[in-house]
Amino acid sequence: MGQAWARNLKDHDVTIAAWVDLRPEAVREAAEKHEVTPDYVGSDLREAIQKANADFVVDVTIPEAHCEVTVTALGEGLPVIGEKPMASSMAEARRMIEASERAGKLYMVSQSRRYDQGLRGFKKLIQEQLGGLGILNADFYIGAHFGGFRDEMPSPLVLDMAIHTFDEARYLSDADPLYVYAEEFNPGWSWYKGDACASAIFEMSNGLRFTYRGSWCAEGLHTSWDGDWRAVGPNGSAIWEKNGKPYASIVSDRGGFHSTMRHVEG
Image (cartoon, rainbow, N blue to C red):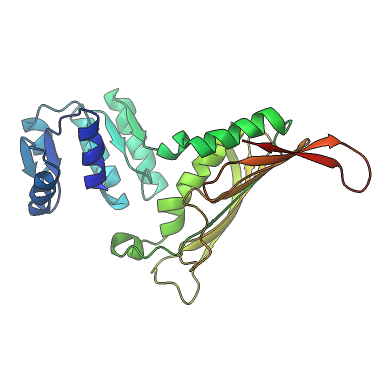
């Protein structure tokens, strides 16, 4: 992920003034690979900030390090853009928010999936065709063999991936969660140490019920990385799945056992 951010920053004419990692030799290899020349390469974030003329910090560490990195950078007077999940606990998240407010500097978490054209097309269908939104469902099933820190996390799916889907639900519904009932579990065949599966029911601030079912150890018949979605309102239903074009089935004539429907492409 650090290399992916380095490519993205370079492609958008951002100069990488410093690159910090617990393994400076890995940074040097990555910097040479991507043809960037940071003024500072090392393992000390505070020293990097003090020596490099930086305007902001990009935090692409593992979740357990997000709080320390963010609080340190904000304390040194630099805004921070971080990777999800925001933190590995609510206590850490509150500490990070307090540090941002105390420093008067921006701290934000990247939620790039909000800009996906398919997701935006799905929202447009919901807004223009469904006549409101009362039910929203998302399924996420992918057998992801990452190796590394995710295999050791207590809650790899909910903390490191489902946050995307939860944020997409907020975007699609223009609502925030009020309450949630959720269960995590880990099937016997899972290669993760922590719970790699979850089911959740959210009550949103506009009365909507959003349900989530997910697994990171589901082999075969994968959903897309954005999940497979169904939205239901008084005028019909809309679907977005496999990263294809969203579509809807909308009532054209009510009456009889089933209403007469018309197909609408997103």
